[in-house]
Image (cartoon, rainbow, N blue to C red; front, side):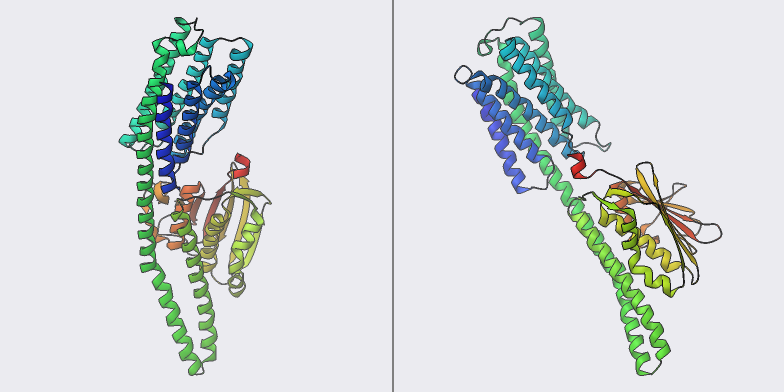
Length: 453
């Protein structure tokens, strides 16, 4: 029976490894494949009980079975979009190892070892169920309900097995000669491996379908932006070049100078838009993955402001900058993209001779940058406060709860809203009653990969 259980786990692991190699971007599949392999190792070592040292057939074997369930838990967390937490699984593994060493060599007791392994597997299976139940509120797929029910039944079996051993069967001397209840544990592994293999495979297919759907939507959005929003500024560039050429041939040097300045400004705006599209495309087509790295707020402000310093001088803007020194951990390219768009709007719409203020200070769990200008403000008339980053997909929402279409605020802010929604940043665009506006960009500080490890 142990060999049959090992064979079932091997088939599960092999199928999931092949599936993971086919779709390596799927979160969780590799963990499930490793879990199947560990379960197979554990069952195989148990089947050689009395033929190999007890350390292998008892301690290592049962530790492998527990490690397999830890891997299943980590895979489910990744599938549900959570950061895989290793502390709980590591603690259960350590406790299992300690107790098995004690009750194998210190105070040998087969019954207590059965209670320990039953408790560990029941706890890990219950955690898998809890992760599913605590996940997103949207309706779950049928296969997710199947896996949830499987782990619930698996947990219930081991709870009953542990209670039976504790209350009735405390005198076990040889596990391989134990009652039928403990023999049913191998049947449980066979059924569990078979159904879990099917469930995990279908969940992998479900993840691939969701990723493909998201990529198709992103590509459609990108093509729509290229068709409607990128073509317009390029047409403006072509028109300005034609006007410059005509003015130069006519000897209108003053007009050439003015048009050349407009041409440079328009070219800068088009370049910024293309950079935003490239960055956003990379972000979308890699599943929204971003790596947090530490950076200085002063460096962020300097680099985001650099492309617009010439315009600040040309417009004779008074630049007031009061930014508290701080270090943050976030995706630097994405934070720079959002700040660059806010600064671009502030400089563009500020009247000549106006005042542009950049202030920054730390807030709870974030750092807020405030950009104030004397321009015309944001969005439609009467929209006193617009929030970016709240709601699915980065929708724009007024304070009153009504929706402002993305097209009303420009392509750059539309892309910024999507990034803010995914990474937990928040931008509030406030129009002043007597003219001017303030952009408040709260950058969420999140741990780096090294901090997490």
